[in-house]
Image (cartoon, rainbow, N blue to C red):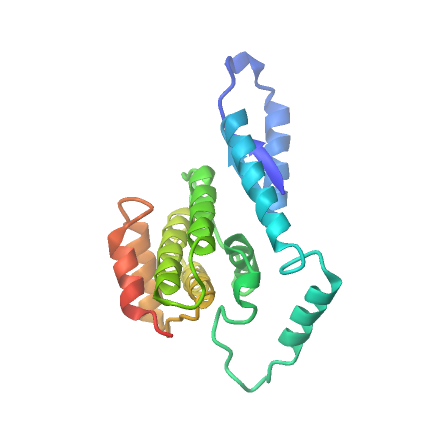
Length: 224
């Protein structure tokens, strides 16, 4: 995990253009390689994020990482899926995957995604973190867990759609991520092209991260 500070210097004269360019280039390489990184504004923000992330990593030990047996079992389970069976999107390893892992995994299944010029990277990171907290604090096998998955999916959809330029690849990507998040609680949406277009445009037009229209759309179409 990498952390980058995103706050203005006390004086512009303190900025070294070459160093700033190098940092931005490195951050771009980190993102393209699939490595997790987060933005923070103050030392207290960094402390909060680091504590939350380290705590989650400790909890995930032996489940999604850091355990030869667990990793081998997960790999074998994926290998043994019948090729002819249609596996529901987002339903392969269940809770073993985090929101951020899903976001990066699904990038491998679409063409190059273009980001909008004007977006705040911190917004998307906070949306992912909040969505993960919603899921982690919900039960896995009842109605409340499914409601949590719908809320988390809607939150992530708005964050992604507002960051990505509109394209067929972006719309397919957002739809796949949505289904993967829903799949963590046994839900899915049977997508078609019109649905993907409709959700993407609805998410782009969202008034804020917790847009009711996007959540209602997801709730109306999600099924177990």
